[in-house]
Image (cartoon, rainbow over all chains, first blue to last red; front, side, top):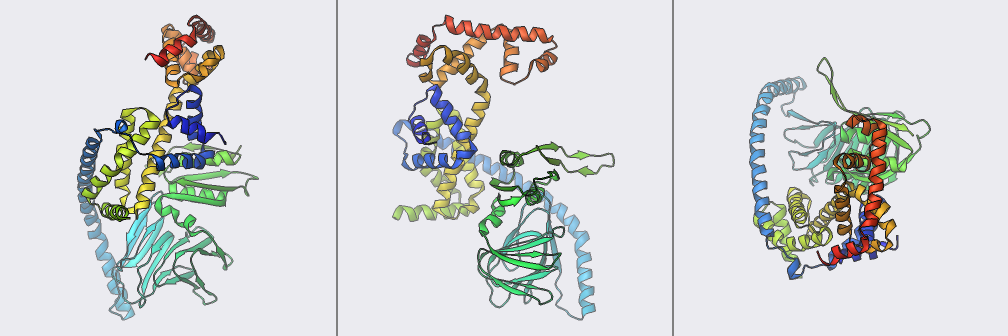
Amino acid sequence: MKQEPKHINDYFEGKRSFNNELKVREYFTDDDIHEQVDDVVGEQWGNYSPTEEERNPKLKYLFYELQYKINAEKEQKRIKIRKMVSRFMQVAAIVVPVVLFLGYNLGWLQGTNGYAEQIEVHSPPGTRARFILPDGSTGWMAGGSTLKYPVRFDGDRVVEMAGEVFFDVEKDRNHPFIVKLPDYEVKVLGTQFNVLNYPTDSISEVVVASGRVEVADSYGTYSKVLHPNKMLELNKNRQQIQISEVNAESYTSWIEGRLEFNNDNLYEVVQKIERFYDVDVELNIDGLEDQLFRAKVNIGNLRELLRYMRLTMPIKWSMEQARKDNNGTITKRKLTIEKK
Amino acid sequence: MQVETNTDRLVQRFREGDPIAFEKLFDQYSQKLYGFVQSYLKNIQESEEITQDVFYKLWINRSYLKSDEAFKSYLFKVALNNIRAYFNRKNTEEKHKQLVAQEFILLADSSADEMEYSAVMKLVDQIIDQMPAKRREIFLLSRKEGLDINEISNHLNLSESTVKNQLTNAIAFLKDEVKKNNLSSYLFFMLFYR
């Protein structure tokens, strides 16, 4: 691959022989040398400035066209939101009284007046959702996750969750932020961290991106302080914990729409696929249980991910489209991954 | 240094959704972006579309662009992705012509290696266009769509032997044309007198 900078640079300078064109196209479309090509082209980009005749006086019109497009989309969105709000209001009209009623009753039973109503949000599988909490803390929920928090924080900031959630917590020394989970709780003052705890998984994990995080179990048998790039894993069946050094970014990249696989085995890969692509997966991979997979992909293009998998592992796959059966129930699309 | 802080402030305003900052950033980067993409594509319309698409994506994802550096590297990344996609698409569209060129023209005339790609493609187009309609259709189904003889015969409702014959004829025709045309002079002509 020593040749490629020369071919690409020749091409950039305008050398378009049949052979050179084929070579350059091959380089650009070959995933294995993606990064090398990026470097070569990046250097060209750094050194490039357009000559007078390369400039295009029409470009400004492209901008006006774009502005028009953006404004038109904004208008569309406004209409959509208006529709959604009115639908939300209908739903809210039914749900809110129930919650308030429950809240009131519980408060009364517990003999406290400070009982705040809880809000519960869900993100459907195959989506990501951003949220903002009453204290200004923000974060992202991965597909199939649930987050519960009070309308107003009073004292400690306590939330509950299931699934995978990334928290970016506002600093407030006097009011710890606590994530309550069935097996343990995570306590912080102001940090960024990722919690993964799907009820159906036997492994639960906390990864710290910045700041300091305390993890303690409900029975008081352990209490650990975690620093950035540390991960605590809990095996729920055995109630065993393990702390390891990780690259936090590869656990939080999903919030930016990227998925990273760092030597994940096929089961772990499939779990992520099910969550981030809203698809049911069937695995028939006798003997490939220990195959490890590394990749970075953009969430959204499942075929690209499958192509990488097929390049690195002896597997084949097939996809069955989503269907509606006679009862009107919709089955998800189904992906089958098999040994080749 | 002065310039850099200015861009930083621009990017920050852009991130907050300021349309004037957006326009200024467009003015600052669009010519470079367009010129660069055009150096690769040599296709004005496609390069304009890519330029617009890059700025559209920058706008949509502006909240993630936390610094001048992030803005610039995202701009380059989207441009490069677009160039890649263009090459991918072109390769799919032109694969069969590349193969015809390699199989018939370049074997017949080794100096054609250095001929300009677009000239070679044009020549292949011209030769294929000279085939009788049915033969051309069968040839393209085989080479471009990748269908086998059985699939073509089902698709066109012809017998397999007819399809086979037409394909044999198409290949003989290509070989003849290449010989007849004294290609290297033809290609030189295309190269210098277009």
